[in-house]
Image (cartoon, rainbow, N blue to C red):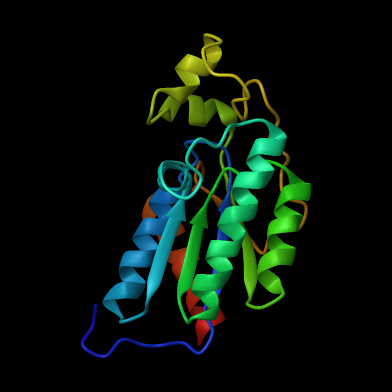
Length: 183
């Protein structure tokens, strides 16, 4: 972090949604690093970390996901109201649950939804954690894109296509989007 941290009066929450393996956390992490180098206070909250900490034991049914993401929305809101830029990276596959998240957060701080778009076939090809292989063999229940639906966001604030555009292009798009929100 820079010598004089840039303390925002109010932070923001940028929520990245998309299929597993679409590139959400990679994008969030890269943008967070750029912003931290400029002195901003930034937190990345992603599904893997959250399920090991604040939502330990959370399941994957629609209702379990709703409860899990309800918790995350409140944590993000608390951080943002204290001047932190919060980049949340969650599959968050249902429109009604994303609407709940937006309602919780936007009561107090700006909320922006970013759709990290990538065809399921490409996510299966990438399969960074081997989860699609397991889901296709029936070893994982409620796996988004295989045995559970992913509802495309109806009105995202930004769409980033990780199939058509490379990581540098997409990092730049998300970075510029966040910078416009905080300046």
